[in-house]
Amino acid sequence: MPPETREFLAILAEVAIGTVALSGITMVLLMARQDPGERQTGLVASQLAMAFAAVVASLVPLLLNTYGLPISQIWMLSSAVYATIILTLQIPRFLPRARFPRISGLSAVIVTAPGASGMVLLGANLWIRTEWPYLTQLLLALATSMILYLYFMLISLTPEQQP
Image 1: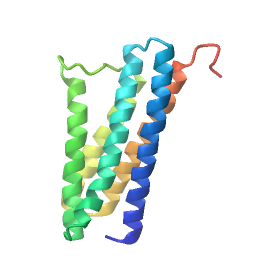
Image 2 (image 1 turned 60 degrees about the vertical axis):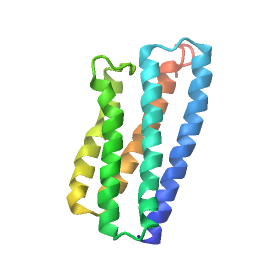
Image 3 (image 1 turned 45 degrees about the vertical axis):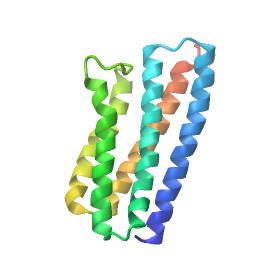
Image 4 (image 1 turned 135 degrees about the vertical axis):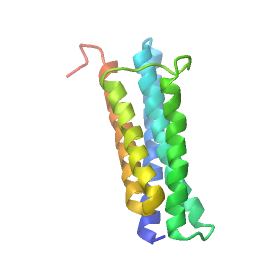
């Protein structure tokens, strides 16, 4: 694996970890001040799950690279693992008896978009076996995680605090 790709994956993992830490602390402080609704709880759960998935998915290719696998196998296996993580995190949202907080409207679109793009990009990467679909999906997940955090902050502000 090229050193640039390794460095990029490490940076993505670090940024995702920072996002989880910052958003987790901020969300806990905001939720301690006010009674969170199901929408806010769903946003928190989705944002933290997405950032966690980005951390794990950033580390998988680095781990596989240490075993000396061919680069095409690294991207194929990493894509399979990442797609499995996405499915594992998305499926409970659609089960009727799941205890996952429900979200709807714009929040649902924001949360569903990276899952759908992940199935397309990572599914295609099982045959393409290159880095760009994987890295693109990682960036989409991280960007979505940050958007969810900002959206949570916006809806958590009282009307007097909103711009």
